[in-house]
Amino acid sequence: MSVRTLVKSIQDIMRKDSGVDGDAQRISQLCWLFFLKIIDDQDQELELMREGYQSPVPEQFQWRSWAADPEGLTGEALLAFINEELFPVMKGLKPTGQPGDRRRVVRDVFEDAYNYMKSGQLLRQVVNKINDIDFNNLTERQHFGDVYEQLLNDLQSAGNAGEYYTPRAVTAFMVDRIDPKPGEIIFDPSCGTGGFLTCAMKHMRERYVKRPEDEALMQQSFRAVEKKPLPHMLCVTNMLLHGVEDPGFVRHDNTLARPYISWEQKDRVDVILTNPPFGGKEEDGIESNFPQHFRTRETADLFLALFIRLLRKGGVAAIVLPDGSLFGEGVKTRLKEALLEECNLHTIVRLPNSVFKPYASIGTNLLFFEKGEPTKDIWFYEHQVPEGQKAYSMTRPIRFEHFASCIDWWGGAERKGREEGPQAWKVSFDEVKARGYNLDFKNPHSEEADLGDPAELLEALNAAEAKTANLRDQLKAVLGEALVR
Image 1 (tube, rainbow, N blue to C red):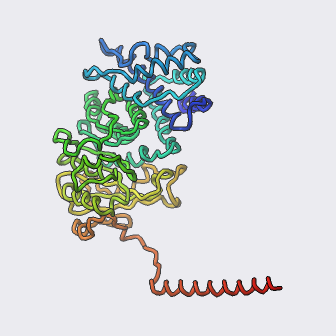
Image 2: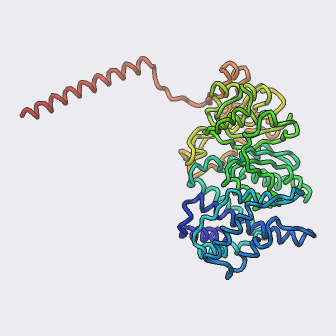
Image 3: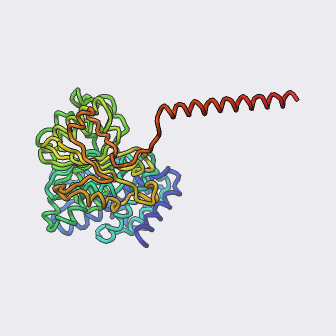
């Protein structure tokens, strides 16, 4: 049975359980079960490779102890064990503080996890299916990683999933243009399910990781934070699936809850890759962590202020921002002024509204900037839906190859030889400043629809309204005569 078929069969079993309501709960349930199996498979490998290695999971709660035997605990006994013993212990694990201790990772995953299943018999069937996956088999783990990506994609139907799912083609393009390397501190302050982190790993493994030391250096260089429990759990499991031994760098926290001024020189990072949540408001009091001139409850604005501070000199960033951040006023204007003065905002890629469908239909932009030098010129590139396609959709989503023309135009690492064309144009800092730091520049090469002279349009409207009134009067007269008869 293929991994994809196996996972589908597990989901089919869970759909029969009265306690699991919808995709979000089903995926959350799958996640903590997968997590325990993956940790146990890793533990068994590490026990052979490292003398004195100890699992972060107490022996009686390790997968091999209670789940591996297909004829083991089931029914009410299994439910009682899970709900009354396993979960309380996992939630209460105390980290030792020693390097490489993974107890905090386990505790954080279970902190907001729940067992939604009410049938112990169905739960045993799910457990037995999961037993068929060997996460120490590299090929099988890679196949499962692909299926896991699809599970994350399925979250589109689990409520407001856009807040933690970014199309993989977009993350891959951003990582490709930033070109991170092992040893560079890479930070995603709102990491969701870990899409930028996994793309960065794949990029570096394909290009720069040649020795075990390179792999270790890369894994030590990631920093990530996720505020919400479900995406945090999904992200940690995603890291394990991608061969990360200790995903403790994925913290369950709110990046914005830390006072702006407390981010010191030692906290500076080399690379920021992220899609900060936008369209939402932070809870009361969060904005007071920021300087007066940057205070707002708009999440994307607070993150942008933080990015400018967190990048070290020479550091680079690629972020997703909505159209509103480009033309907004007030705090948004002060943020853009700070960004252009402290960083070189060299490229803005404008995306069609349909890229994030079906869970968002607003215009979005990819901003690429470097810390240390002020902005002189900004290049814009308008990404267009492929010819013959009206918009992106769930059935025809954006793909990495759709960015090929932009990559060809980019001009390599030095961004040399860029030229204006049907999709590309350049504006100067002076032009931006003259517009009150409004970055919402439309493509000057696209043909705007000719709507005609306003005075003529108004005259035509008045004539049409008069004609409508005349026809209405005629209709009334006809109806009146008919009623009299």
